[in-house]
Image 1: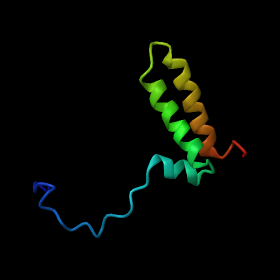
Image 2: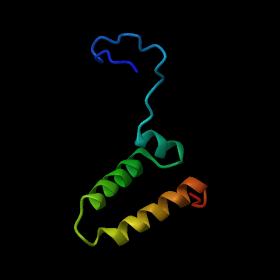
Image 3: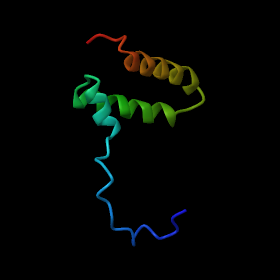
Length: 73
């Protein structure tokens, strides 16, 4: 196990580019505005009130459809 503090580790050549959720959604065919809106809705529903369970189920279902390519644009 590496116990050195992160400030000391300077060898970052092996670390590739970091892919954000927005990048992933854009690769799936969403525009930048659509991706930002979806991520905003996700955050809003996740931090919502007690009625959020049903909405989260819908979001998870949408996520599965997008992941499987079932939603045509």
